[in-house]
Length: 106
View 1 (tube, one colour):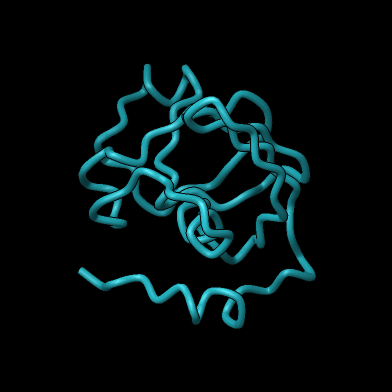
View 2: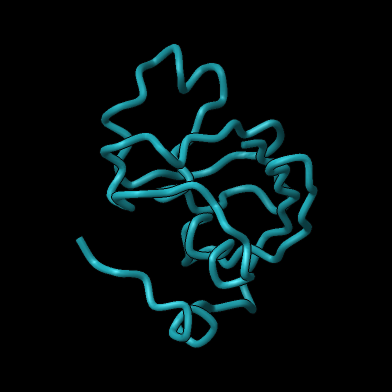
């Protein structure tokens, strides 16, 4: 498991190609630019938001959220079944934006 280095986040993400995302977490709504080459967890951490996560490899499910609006692509989502995916569940440690405008709820 690799430790996330938030000091690297701003330089390694291509913010010129980014989606807009509204993230609802713990009763607070956050508006962010979500670089297409970054996961939602890394984007939120680089913005100073304490997002639930653990393994960052798509195996534990602690970062599960619901895509209320928009589409994401996930490299690994073995723990989510077809019904979960149909309900809009995503693993934010794996999710990268496909749509230009998204709304995610934790």
